[in-house]
Length: 167
Image (tube, rainbow, N blue to C red):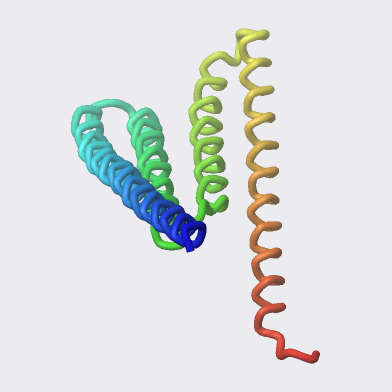
């Protein structure tokens, strides 16, 4: 009887610890979500300010600054989606983070491409920029293939679950 009572107490303590950690985890995720949302709003306001401040500069410079900032907003929003998905499903989902990686690569490719055009006559610097663009392009392709494989696996798992027993 005493041993059974000790086991029940241990199980109760474990359930309490699990509930407490679940609440703490939710608080952390919600804090991250609030910060990402706040950061997104601040970035959007900053992009409006950039647009107003650069209205007398060449269009290509203005659009590059705007695109750079908006891609950063997309990264924040995609991270917010990842946090929301983690809160809802209680598991870490890889796909949103892979999409963030693709967006970050694209952002850097855009910036490096414009910079490379400015240093076209500087041999080693230009070569380095082109290599960086190539590596980022390859990384984008690898991340896209990873997303494709994850989606393929998810479809196969859904297909197996939907299959009637005995088939």
